[in-house]
Image 1 (tube, one colour):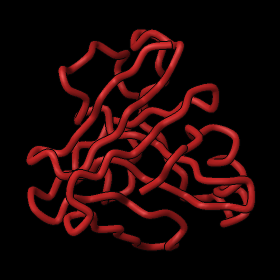
Image 2 (cartoon, helix red, strand yellow):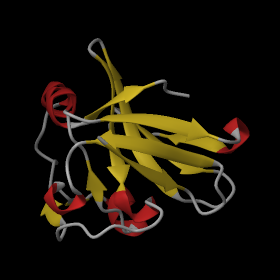
Image 3 (spheres, one colour):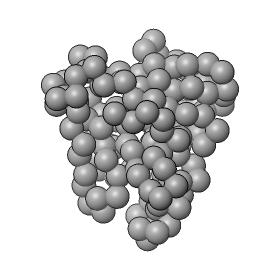
Image 4 (spheres, one colour):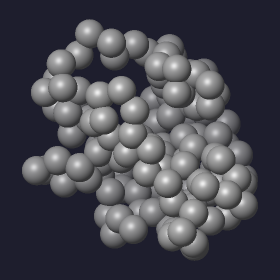
Length: 139
């Protein structure tokens, strides 16, 4: 199991991704919603891995919700960096992680553009529970 560290620019928000997958095999997505496009996000998730959030300064964690209000986007209040998106469901907490914040950067496959506009809220939650990374010790 490898651990990869991601963090915002100022270091207030971060994560530890624990995975057995090599970065070269990570599924990389470029969501086409306006939030992800304007942040230039490239995200990944793996239901066989786990992620632990490391919040050095909880006052800087902004949980932003938009549109369907179905997930919290973790954005640093200080430096403005989008770190991850987290959903909570009866099955637990699941996240998709912004790869652009991994330190040091890793080589990953090219991002595949994805569109989720046609999903119902139930379909969206089911997809996230199936495909996103389980969260442990969420701050």
